[in-house]
Length: 134
Image (tube, rainbow, N blue to C red; front, side, top):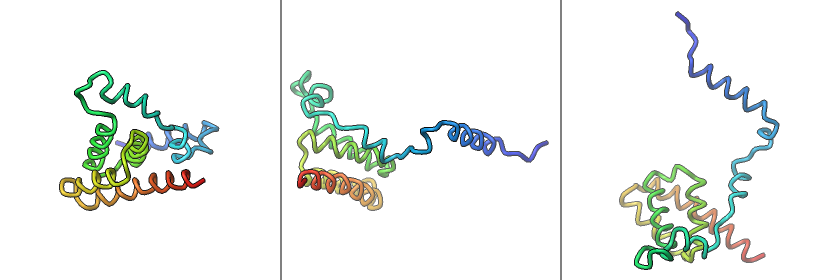
């Protein structure tokens, strides 16, 4: 019988393998997120909006619903929350609509999830305001 934990061995091997990739030294999650970009509003409407289904939801509404769902999951996926806020703004959502969507979820997801999502959304909204001022 061995005292070695197979999980620890697997993690050690994965870390060694990651060190072998030269680009991993410079990898930054924030840098990767910045490369993702935002779809233009017309493209979002075509793919996710009501262009093909005129009686369906528009892209802005779909993105606000997606944001609500991410808050319901505890706002654990920071990148997804920030990207959804960016896309919601691009699709025409106003700051107040984003805040109300997140705030509404406090009754269902709890205050900590709402606060976390609000912090992440505020990062995006502050970035957008700074870019608009420049």
